[in-house]
Image (cartoon, rainbow, N blue to C red; front, side, top):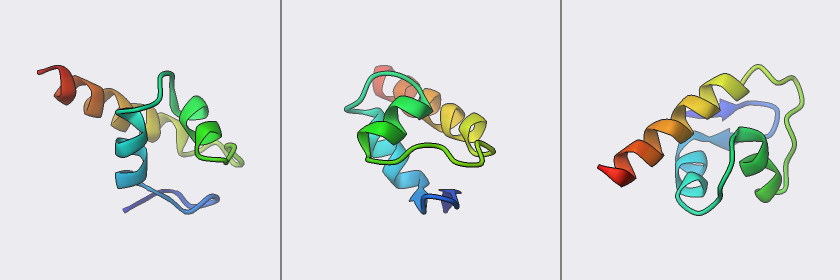
Length: 58
C-alpha cells in the first residue's frame, strides 16, 4: 500500500527503513532520498515506524 503518494513510498519501504534508520518519518524519507511534500502522510508513516520498531523489540 502506498503511504506517500507524492514520493511513491510504500508501507513495506517505510518498514524496512525503520529497522535500519533512526528517527521519524522525515529522517527516513531523507535517508531514502526524498522529502515530504504535502506532508499528509507523515502521521501515518510515523505510526508505521513506531509499530515496526515495537515489533522488533518484542
